[in-house]
Image (cartoon, rainbow, N blue to C red):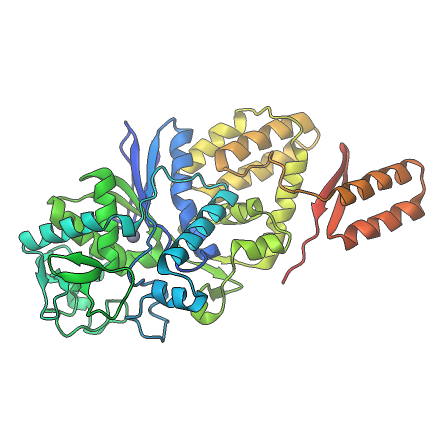
Length: 460
Ligand SMILES: [Zn+2]
């Protein structure tokens, strides 16, 4: 039985013990590259999947692609006009259509999660292809008296009608001040400052990403997108809903109010949130000019597996201050572990421990500590160490046995020549060859089972 922290009840709880566990994960907004902070929260559903798999439980993950509407990400720091659609703004900047922008960054998202060995979700619905469902659920909310049309034609959720608003974040309606930066922009046609737009009417200012509805031409509000895609995928019951901690309010609060109002009961069993990621002590955001992409890390010569390990060494509910030093240290560990794998055999002693740690609210730091402890005690037994690391790798998705580098033939030739020089005890030649290997951007780790070629790390 696995236990995971539920933000709403503020307690540890368990997903259903039988049947497939249904997981909805808030996905990327595809108008720019996802950064390491986003990737940390995208790792969360994969960890839950692995924890369940360790207990022979099956899961089904749905993760949405937000490719329409204006996004709340960074909106509290963004000084630009918050009503501007970020997708359209980026399309203009890159001289592409909004759809081309969406597909370009969606592909980037899939490439990044694949590199991090995050299994592709079972379903990845796109907001732009779910408009009909959004119109249906908005109509349901209007029929039930939870939504109204403002004087400007836009449709709003009536927050005062939903009694338990604020249960996830603790931000009750009484506490919300008019014009709160995190709520929708101040809108005079709302009845109450805590209401939010479900459908925004445009007056022909936009040429792309608008749809015809019974209320006029416009585009959906962000929160209703997730409600529509989640209910479409799972009907009236979702076991676990994940996201980054910054989505707790207002996104998840509003999504919960909408979904529960439509279905007439609590839709989500557990709300699970990943904490913030800082980089070199600062929030990762474009507005503070502190954005690091997975590509930047790979370009520095650090493998995606090292990024995954650095994430796992910190509990998902702890704020993580990632630094280049942490990543370099993780790369060293990954390289050592990879080099220790001598066959694809694996044993079960560590598996039981990892299973237990994962069940304890995804306690990956303790699992990693257990691996390090066992690694030391197995130092004299390469075969057993290999079996242990293989088992750990499978359970935590570290991918240690996979070859990670495509190395130029010219570099491989230099390494082979260096081996011959070393065998002939021609150390002058061997040093020269090592220098040439370094110039080519690699270094050689001389292990007991032969030379292992590594890319040199060059931090930006
Ligand atoms: Zn969402």
